[in-house]
Image (spheres, rainbow, N blue to C red):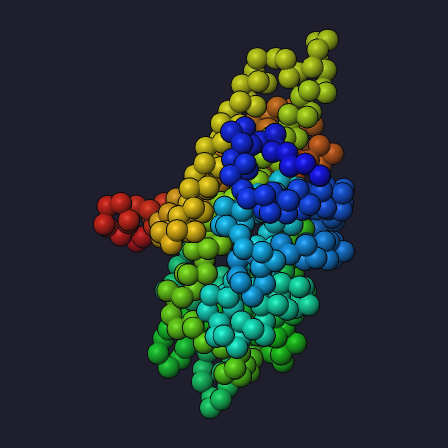
Length: 392
């Protein structure tokens, strides 16, 4: 199947990918279009996760692309960003499932695990044999996780006892393991633990009533004297700086996913305006509709350029926290503008699921906030460029 750039890629950034990467994207795109896109509106409305798509997302190697133990071929960070874009272009919740499984759960083991832990867990997470979640955010600790974490890990000989709670944990209602971040009672440093969800004292309860990312199964987690052996403590997670190494990688991919949401809304709006007839002609021929579409495309194109560069910096070993923070802050803000303009282009039909834009419009709000709010990412960049911390 010949490779084609998508309508949202006006400058043809995808042509920067290698032939092998393009082939992968072509196959993934076809699978998403045929097996995932037709069902997402139904499951979004029901606020349920379509478990039948897990096999689709794992079987072609989309999970584990960033680590040599699980990558099907050598690939670039730019390519991995495009995978996140392609997923979110179909549905933000599907992209979030992959982001949690791949970037957070598998990524935490890949970045902070020992060689033995990587060898045991990475293939299982990549194949879907084991489903994972990532437990960092707490009911009273979100943006201040570096200092405000209240979950405690107490050493007891060859085991650790975890007590505390987590909130907004994606995939947690059906995960087999959750990577739990807790402060050590001994040294006050944040450490990571691979916690099987069948462990006594571990409870996950679905968060109801969400109006964004309704397919994602977020949960409140309680940990009551949860016993974890030392062998399941991530051996290279010894402070929040190590947690931040995981987030640095995922934050850039969330920026790519935000672009994907904008692209999905833009392409849906473009299709609609070419077909919708008012005053005897397609509304795409109206000047104000073209203005909305062009502004949307400009946001998308600028965001792809920024994300491409920050991913190139990762490949070159030059990416720092402030680089991924700027990408996330900028791309999500532009996404938010874009989905609103696309909804506007559809008029009243922009608020029903039939035309997809309503789903992108609602889901954008979650991406705007998770993996670091715009305000927190702004302060990370502000500290880097001024030398002054302004977090409190």
